[in-house]
Image (tube, rainbow, N blue to C red; front, side):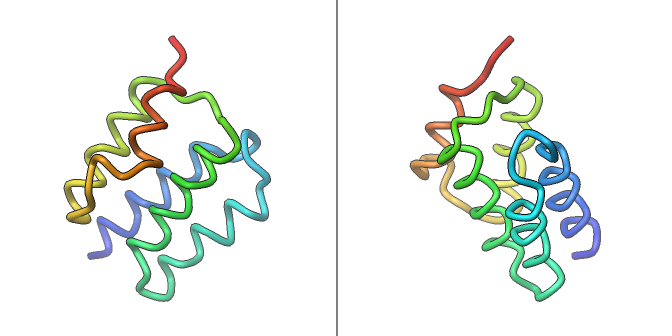
Length: 87
């Protein structure tokens, strides 16, 4: 699980300075309390909620993490993230 924990943290750190750093760090910290799913969902909710532009690679990482976490790829935050992709 340590590898997955690091992947979630690394995903969150991609958005430092594009999201409020403290809000993002709070979400990332959920991983340290064995709340991987909550950490990932909160990061995605913040990305969607604040309309943060993402790259295709960042979106693909989110989709990959959905699979590893057994989350629904059709979750509203994940689906909306696809609309935030900027090339």
